[in-house]
Length: 220
Image 1 (cartoon, rainbow, N blue to C red):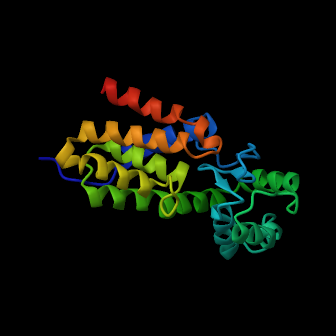
Image 2 (image 1 turned 45 degrees about the vertical axis):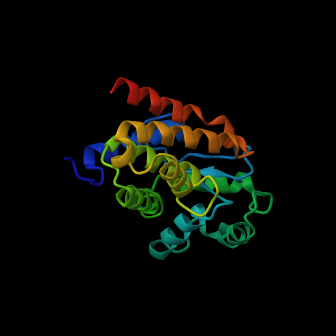
Image 3 (image 1 turned 45 degrees about the horizontal axis):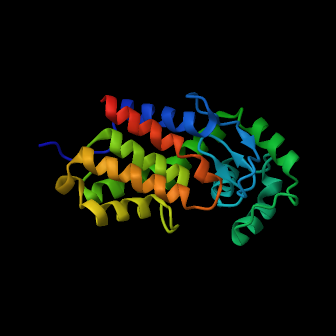
């Protein structure tokens, strides 16, 4: 009987490539990505779609500041703190165009890329793996899907967060051991799709990333 484990190096690399394809339309991690995509989250940046509204972009910048004080993104930190506290997608006070240029230029620094990697690992990957452990997920594909949900919808607290999707799936069909891993993943994908569609945001237009995983699961 297989036992739950975190993704190995090759599995994690493939999961990161798949998430990058969903987030930035490329399997090459797009550390320099920066754009306002009109989803009320402000400016979306970096390899995992860090935003000015949800505080993770600020986390990246603050972490980078500890080792590289005075860098070109540092001047945006006070306004990012205000946006984070207000959960606001308004970027007029940054100003947006200057912030985008600064992010793209800073992304040339390997140290800044390493900070992005660390924040993704801590805020999205680790919570996803711990949640997968909690319910007994074995399949690397299912774990990768939980990780993708964590990046795309947030790890916890929100009504459509990764933890919310896992919780409702377990409520409906039990644990993977009880339902069978394939059946559990199938229901998880359905629950996730329903939550995206009900979100009332542009995330309702992103169900294709869930459909892609369903196709992967169907073909083995």
